[in-house]
Each structure stands twice: as structure tokens, then as C-alpha cells.
Length: 144
Image (cartoon, rainbow, N blue to C red; front, side, top):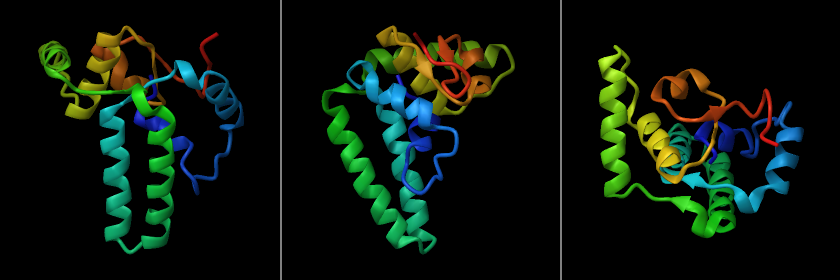
């Protein structure tokens, strides 16, 4: 499953420095990958923030890119349903019991990955490792 941090690396206008290997891997494994619905919300929020700040042209380009991404993942966007929400509550409480205060988005993404039994590809290991989710940074290493 792809975290927002990985999806964002592929957005147009990012410069894409150092992501050629990741892009090739994602293309080769596309049918086996999933997106959390939360990543869609986070990307959409970023696009709207850009538009509000006056970056209309770039925001429109990112909107088209997001539409294409959603079309490509069609039935592989994982929804936040009641079972996942309950797991998110457990993950959040366990983190808080350890003195950590993760944001809702990270907790929900971790719960989606755990519930589906998926490895989470993220550039933010420090956010997800304490949540007990299997994760790796695809900019460092890729699953085989």
C-alpha cells in the first residue's frame, strides 16, 4: 500500500529527482498496489491549498493527475469502514499509552494497511513504525 508521501513523489512538477527506480518498480507492480482513501484526501487537501494560494494552473494540473491516479487504481482504493475505524482507535490508544500522539491520517493509514495485511510503503518511517504497521521506505529499498 502506498502512503501519501510516496504518491506525492510522483506528482507532476515535483522534479522527480531520485525517483526513476521507484517509478519503474511501481509501474511493474501496479496491479498489486493499493491506495488508502486517506491519501486521496491528503493529496486533495494539498491541491485545494495550492489553488487557494493562487496556484490555479498547477492545481488544475494536479487535479487531472489525481483523476488519472484514481482511474488507474479504480477498485484498489481502500475505504475507511467501521472495522478499520475500530482498529484505528486501538492503534491510536496504544500509541498514546506510549506517550506518542500520532495524527488521525497516519493512524487511519496504518489501520488500513494492518487490516488488509499489506506492507506500507512510506517515506515517513518515523511516523509509522511506532504504530506497529509493517512498513518500509521505497526510496531506501524496494520489496522483492
